[in-house]
Length: 149
Length: 149
DNA sequence: CGACGCGTGTCAGTTTTCTGACATGCACCA
DNA sequence: TGGTGCATGTCAGAAAACTGACACGCGTCG
Image (cartoon, rainbow over all chains, first blue to last red; front, side):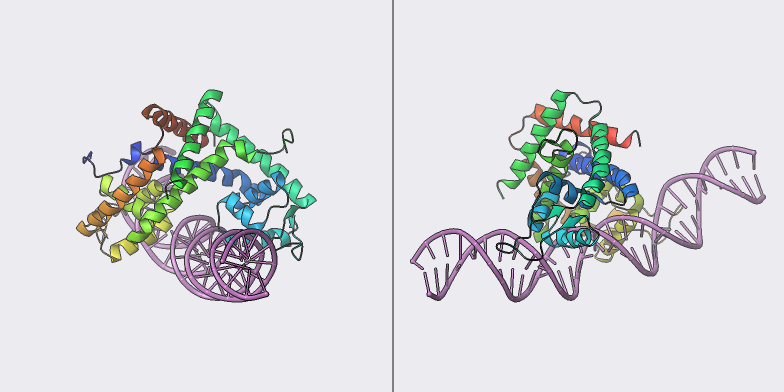
């Protein structure tokens, strides 16, 4: 080990740790969402719609970090099952603004509580200051990664 | 907005930001690995094997954060294409220790350089101290998420 | 010794997500 | 007015990951 410049040294790599943390979070969320019959993307979509009603399919896709094609599949299912409504035709352009139904809102309520608990558990043992610093660090990483394409 | 306890407030959620950062990293890695004909999991497998030769399929799966079934599919492809070797039969138990071939090592070398550049870019603008703090913060989150199942 | 639990490698089928492609509608500008 | 660029919604096929299931080898313990 410790070949001079060759390896990435996964045990010390922030990138690797980032993936590890993200995976741990996803697994924890799946764990609490499964009993509710929900996937993470499913939940993300509902949560986004609760915070910004009228978001389009493409906007939701960007917000949930999937392609608009994947989100479209999900939205059609959510619409079919009565969690979400979209107008049959666009009022302007092609954009179809989506809305939560009462059923969607109620379903989200349970899920949101469960996910909030997971996030609280994740942050246990960190001070407000540490959380704020971690927040800024992650923001910086995102900014740097997206900048100099 | 700002319904008291109801929402998760995605713009202030460390969990959401964690997913965002992880996605940005994955996208950036895919961008530089695609010209080399490699996926992220593909690269992860090779990097793991370089650091710890003789890892088994299941160990590689855990290290790359996929199921052992997924890793098995990948390993078979890597073996077929001559990046990796595994003994035909287990010396002890069922564990088949994998090894990089010279071709695998060479292929990894390019990929590793590209990925290292991405990580450097990601950390641009952060001091050593900030990186160290971010590292400890992420470690803490992983630990907390895995602990009180 | 025999039973049990646990980890492993692997096969099969399903689900999810992605890439590619097309038509449509808006905004902009020559 | 017509052209160009860009974003959107959607369809279709392909790639990647997952869940379920089975057989096998090892260790432990009654």
